[in-house]
Image (cartoon, rainbow, N blue to C red; front, side):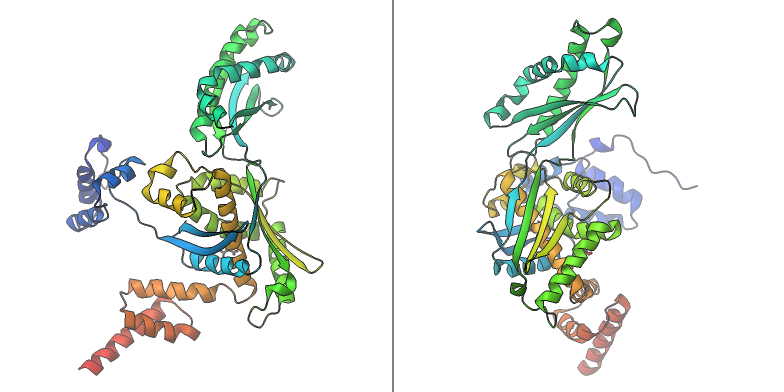
Length: 447
Ligand code: MEV
């Protein structure tokens, strides 16, 4: 049996020590790999320390492209949108959609709400009507005890909002939760919310133990956990575009009417069929995640909340919608986005800071608008391709370039290959064959 490769005290090793252990144990060419991993370190040591600090056991950096999509007109203001994505065509497609709508009045974005959510989950065996009877008193105590945590947020116009008792005892014995709403202004608010909730846990325990309303057996509460919810159905932005159908123009041979009809149907299909809804929404998150990443926000939180929102009526559906009424085409997207423009990575990550600067140092609400619009534009671009040329045409060119890069093609070879594959099917073997032939011919000519 192969010897298990384990280590104790790995986290205490220096960065070089960690690399040494990794390459010696897992790579055939340890010296080459060690050198390569180190080659991705930043030359600016202070900046490297900041990046290392975001995580643990860091041994190198993992690069992703940082692109920009210009020509976004949102609520009458132009933006250049920073995007971090590894998927080819995403930035090109969204830029094309931005330009398309720039000439048709641009995008509108509207904040439908900014409430964040947190939950204190607890187990309690008592008469619920007794708890309900003193609930206002409990809420006052929860808020008063959390005052040292909320003071600053209160000053900024945020803080704790509604606190509600949710009774789950019909499905789980003795299980209740305090479901709470928070306004966290320009911060994403995870730390703020979790600190408030942990304070609520202590207050609830003390309140129940000391309040005269409860019998001896009702004095004990078991706090299960205190944590924010990434489902924020009341922290939502609506992004939209609209224009008379005729203003959509022609799409190659396709007239505006046919395009509008096919586009409407494509979105309708995503509203009724979860298989298509998932792919449609994936296209939306191609845009959303890229800006969330570029601005140092938490893309896992955004994805989780977005997908739950897509299933809010019990079936997973499209986040975007389309209507055609009285000759007018309208396309819109409602998506929950719990974002921050202060705190967290937003001010620590050197490039995230520049992204926010590029966007004009937006408030969290303004960033919700920009990101919601990027999701809508990305969705428009994908569905536009799907109902007109198909997406492979655009994708294949990018795919071809990626293959050529893998084959270490020269600039001349790339140019020739792009010309050659204009009307041919791109596959790795076909491209390799083309390059091999091209190189052979070149050798013959040179000799
Ligand atoms: C690919 O990353 C995204 C699309 O599949 C989205 C869609 O089908 O709407 C093109």
